[in-house]
Amino acid sequence: MEKKIKVYGVPGCPFCKKTREFLKSKGLNFEDIDVAANHDLANEMVKKSGQMSVPVIEIDGKIVIGFDKGKIENLLGS
Amino acid sequence: MKKIYDLIIIGAGPAGITAAVYAARKKMDILVITKDIGGQASWSGDIQNYTGYQFISGPELAIKFEEHMRKFDFEIQENEEVKEVTSRNERLFIKTDKDNYQTKTVIIASGKRSRELGVPGEQEFKNKGLTYCATCDGPLFAERDVAVIGGGNSALDAALQLIKIANRIYIINFTDNLTGDAIMQDKARADKKVSIFNNSRVKEILGDSFVQAIKIEEDKEEKTLDVQGIFVEIGLIPNSDLAVDLEKNERKEIVVNQRNETNIPGVFAAGDVTNVPEKQIIIAAGEGAKAVLSAFRYLSTKK
Image 1 (cartoon, rainbow over the protein chains, first blue to last red):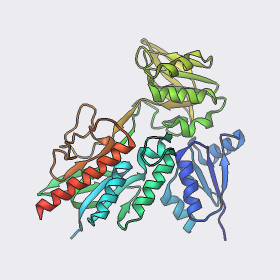
Image 2: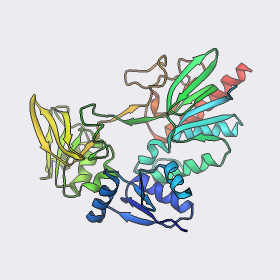
Image 3: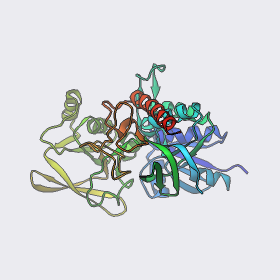
């Protein structure tokens, strides 16, 4: 079954961009959330991840902070 | 018996990646060990001076570099940090946070990182209000009060970005006047949201689970400012703490000669971690190429 992926990021952030490119290169669909444009979603991200940096990647409810390729691949693979 | 590489490249920014491409084309037996791919290039804004690209963003150029590197078939250890390089009987030993390796030559291309404040609370509140990247994390501080630490171009750039986002911006500057470009200074001073504290140093970061305040000392007088965000922009330091006997200059940059040789035989260095004049992507890339050609020549004399 396809995993549910969310990327919380902002437009100008390099590692948000890298994360999106990485997921696209794997042919995966994801919800691209711009936390700069929406305060509620920014707060949701802070609450979920317990910290204030982007990107935050959510894969089937599990949280990865930052573009940590190894962790993301682990969660995608399992 | 552990494998002995021809060359281990530490770092995969513009210098390390270019070195890897050159080494792969020379059919050297190499390994790249790096924390991340792209290095500082990934953090750059718009680039208009890398030949062949009239305009490209930092992350895009970093992705192009990575694609070029991955065209070749060699080992890359990502998310791995080199702790120590030691030399014994013309053999080099690399210790990382995960493993040990042996090699005949090394190119150190580990770049620079953001300088830290070194005050209580800094480690605790990293990414919990305290950040080193205004472009990335700035938008999370909408309508909040924030402090920018520093007085140079990167600090003023951060402050000017934050004017559009935050409620109040305090610039905490160590020297008696801002040092960034006059045009940016004027913009910062003209804005009612901005307050500038000169001759001021940060004493402590305060908060519970997130940053709540910053304690500063302005002209020997202590003040506590309520802020939810702290942007540290006090320059960069080289990632050069890899070998105790490596010669460095007063800025802690690794000293190399025109052939990218360090004072340790078989150890070469390239890019922003070295004393090369001018830190530019295109210069770092060129230095990476030079370092490999020197390492290749060094190896051929040993055969």
